[in-house]
Length: 254
Ligand SMILES: O=C(O)CCC(=O)C(=O)O
Ligand SMILES: [Fe+2]
Figure 1 (cartoon, rainbow, N blue to C red):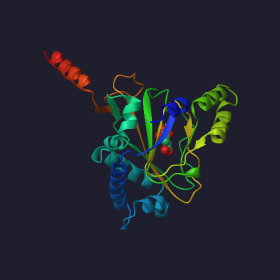
Figure 2 (tube, rainbow, N blue to C red):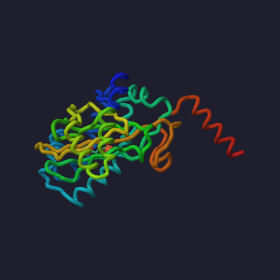
Figure 3 (cartoon, rainbow, N blue to C red):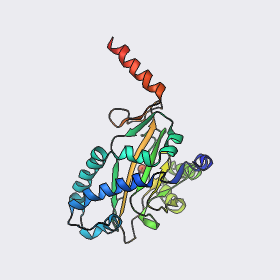
Figure 4 (cartoon, helix red, strand yellow):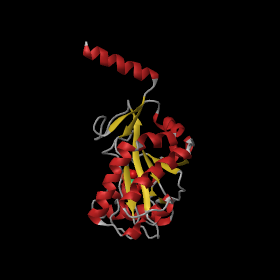
């Protein structure tokens, strides 16, 4: 992992260490998704990119997306698979005792859909000790993806936001202008510090974006508003932590 790049920018874009695991996850999502509409083909990429031709919007789309979210999180175990696909990088970033977000979010951003995430930061609210994994299931370019401010630009944007009169407008304009527009191939994932400012442009391409986002954090790092139990679960333990936790359980039950 390019440590220097992450330290400077607060994010990193990395190719999968195990593309086969990511392809397996994408193909399983595709198998579930194609049953929700009338598609009999075998091309996951084409299906995702051209999904807007089914003209699903509003609650119709939301209901299907929610069903898929449940499937992806529980049955496909996406948190584990994404970890396996980027294992060295994530262990480097987070350490050996790792929690994973229980639910893996799925975003389906169709061309022209103005229902996008506004410019925001995930932390504060979420713990600054989390890393966000943003994992597209299709290629990302121009307005099909997301824009992200690096650490220095995030500081500048927050300065603008602190002006109570025109703060949010300036903040939004600055982010749209200065943000790095993501250019990513399927197989690459973005990992970012949740304090970074990021936002979603109106998708003006002729393809739909399908992407996952999920959070990882160290077991022994401070929690935000979303803690272990409700929002996170244990993914990996160091041998020491495993012994210690089992021993603690025994002590409690004495
Ligand atoms: O992909 C999106 O539309 C939103 C992503 C986001 O804000 C996040 O993953 O924190
Ligand atoms: Fe976000």
